Length: 173
Ligand SMILES: Nc1ncnc2c1ncn2[C@@H]1O[C@H](COP(=O)(O)OP(=O)(O)OP(=O)(O)O)[C@@H](O)[C@H]1O
Ligand SMILES: [Mg+2]
Image 1 (cartoon, rainbow, N blue to C red):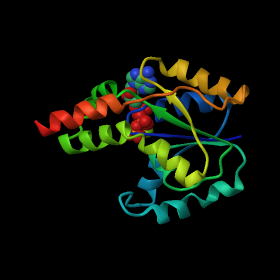
Image 2 (cartoon, rainbow, N blue to C red):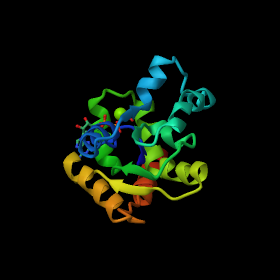
Image 3 (cartoon, protein in one colour):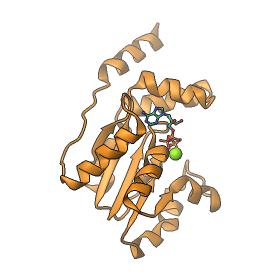
Image 4 (tube, rainbow, N blue to C red):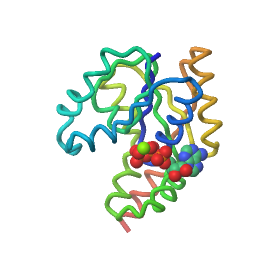
């Protein structure tokens, strides 16, 4: 089984993927670690990343996690995009001491459904979206497991257009 877990920074990919890998006994591949090890500049170098991930072709069982997984097509049976309400995401990212610009960029990406749209474009299919805002990581892991077992075509649906409107309004004032 080949699972991709992507989504904006702070949506819980690492914590959830780690628990899911344990539960399903799958190898866990963390894109961030590969990027660091190979010194890939993620701002521009998606081609280099794609090449560094070519080894996945030889594997049949894994969980790949990383927000960059939405940027390049990887062999996958299941693709999950983790979602988090911008107010909650803001709190999580603030704990990481993100600067104002980085915080805004990340919240904007979440409000614009960036990862979901990107997966649709890059992989040519709709991912399953999982809202991690009001559930424990453990609950998220079980929902992913059930979605796979029950071959679900849809999980949660989120809509942050109201938050985006408010955000843009505040920016203009
Ligand atoms: N319900 C929840 N689900 C997931 N994470 C949660 C939840 N509540 C709080 N958190 C916290 O949010 C943070 C999520 O961080 P995590 O490192 O898993 O995100 P990530 O998606 O891997 O981010 P990045 O793309 O930067 O690697 C963790 O500190 C985690 O403890
Ligand atoms: Mg992570």
